[in-house]
Amino acid sequence: WEMRKDSLPYAMNFSAPGVEIYCLYGTGIDTVENLNYEKTYDLSGKPTLVMGDGDGTVNRRSLEACQYWNGQQKQPVHLQEFPGADHMQILANLAVMDRIVKVLLFE
Image (cartoon, rainbow, N blue to C red; front, side, top):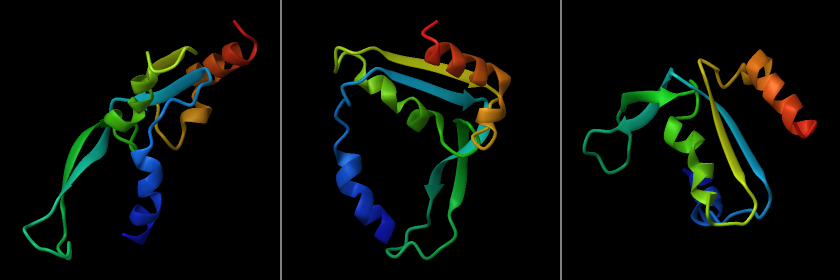
């Protein structure tokens, strides 16, 4: 809870960064999307996990959040999903590495 409170000011400011953006992310892996708690006031119960699409760690909605900046800045925003790419292994994914190299070499 304390971490949530500390990060809230940053989460509330989602302004475009003003630089070209490349969002590369995995999809197609069961990922926690919601935590449903019984009606208690202190969240002391064990939540029911609702699963959805994502990279195994981050849900798809969060992974695609950078698309919000399309039209919010003059610099381009590029999104590319990599089906089956796991959050913890994405940099070992050859297709992802190939894309990163192409970006770095301006291809």
